[in-house]
Image 1 (cartoon, one colour):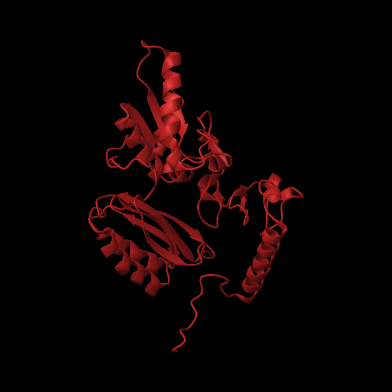
Image 2: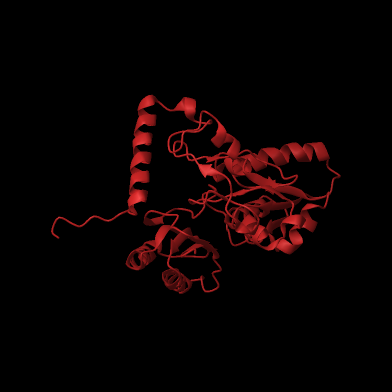
Length: 316
């Protein structure tokens, strides 16, 4: 039976002094044995944490007491083992990096509930854009969505400006205004990117409330317009409808998701490399990765942590 609660969360709000929040939050997570990553910036908080149910509940209560976070609604999943090895609470300039410092992320587009999403993106007048990175889109996306083929979220503004210029030239001056629907994994990137589009003058901007994860959880598979699996940023790697376990694994060499077909390739070596990075890694890199993988398997067999374990201090 699954015993670890995994909570993914974000909130755009104004923190005047994120550094003052960092210490108490990190100390609480450490005391309760919670692991994962939380990012703090002046624009809010973002991250994913895992631990025992009561411990996660206590951390979420602490976060909800922060300015503007009272109605925080994290996404919860369950795992048989913790998907994280250590806890990190970090200070950042942005909780999700778009590279537009003057953007107000609270001025986002119109939310669309998962139950209403199919009707919106089936409208031929609506342009559907996937705001995620290319390696995520390769795992799965909505039918008919545009893939910007970005390597990172900060590439999105430049892509959109170029794309819009081309599209509007093709549509002509008498065409109706653009009507755009966007989505991402959990909602944070499309919330910020819709705010960016509004700042660029696009008035009809919509985004999937709760992201792909809420859609896969709420929309029955026979009615779904999602194709493939959804990449997630933890040891689950990817999930399917109903947030069931996916078929992809993570390459420890390049950190990219590897499909079942990729896993069947002779170029895939578990814990070392995959078809995408096999020829890019030196023999020394592969040897060190193989040794790390051997140690990880040994520790797993013994039931102990391979990384993230805290050693006693010299004084003790």
